[in-house]
Amino acid sequence: MKITLSVIKADIGSIGGHIKPSKKLLETVRNYVADIGSSLLKDFYVSSTGDDIAILMSHTKGKGNPEIHKLAWDAFLKGTDVAKKQGLYGAGQDLLKSSFSGNVKGMGPAVCEMEFEERPNEPFLFFAADKTEPGAYNLPLYLAFADPMNTPGLLLSPDLSNGVNFHIMDVNYTKGDRVISLSTPQDIYKIAALLRDNERFVVESVTTKKGEIAAVVSTTRLHNIAGKYTGKDDPVMLVRVQKQFPATGEVLAAFSRAHFVGGGMRGSHNVPLTPVKNNSPTSYFDGPPLVSSTAFCVQKGKFTEAIDGFDHPFWDYIRLKASRKAFEMREQGFSGPAMLPYSELEYGGIVEILKGLDKRFKIRKK
Image (cartoon, rainbow, N blue to C red; front, side):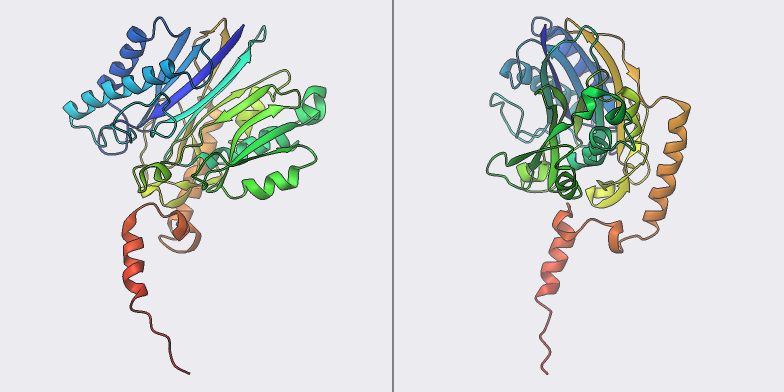
């Protein structure tokens, strides 16, 4: 059976600043999808990560379907009404357009979708990140699909050892989708050369050499849409696992480094990506940047119960590691690599300061 998985995620309001949506807000979104989506969807799952709400849906209508996208958009609008009535912070902040135009891409919410023929056993992982950018998934995807030091299946599994195709997008290009496709193992260094730049080059998807979809990532950059800072991009990702794909544990292991990503406070710092339990709030320094992982199997479009991929004692150690790394970087304050480069600073204040100072510089005569 050919099935489509769609994830659409947005920040439409939060308690106490950028912390967590209210229970009533989550229930409103969940109830709307259940009521209005009953004839459209095979199944769905609503969750929160930090201050964002994500809607995971299974259906048979293919990628980019207007009915599916409008369902999520309208659910977020309904939720925004509740957020405004409750006085939640940032009510509707990720809904950057005033009216639906057939597809939520380019309208603010993060979206990723994959369509495939179901295997007899179809396990997959759903990742949701908050207070960071789409490039936060670059290193984990490289490790999971291209590095045998992380993924022994690249050596032990004949299906995996053939390599995969990385489809990489230049997200700074705003006139269209500027993409390049590179293959492992032959292009592994070229892939690394691009993926080191999380702000510009982002893995859009990974496919097998046979063309099977393995992973998809949302690539929305909000400041390219709004022309100003409205919040971090808060990306989502879907990864199929087992058999011809990396094992679940290999994909999860790629997040154990708690690697530094752009985001955190005011979207302007380098902070470690912290694997958290489902429905965790943000906290220290408007973060740290969070990522949750939820595991499912899907059969004829129906989901099993959700399993929390990071709810295990091992990840408590990684969370302590991430906390240590975050604190050590924060001790540098504004200096050097603690903050993002000027080209990526999201808030306009420092840009205005620099413009004012530029006029005061003088060329000293020799």
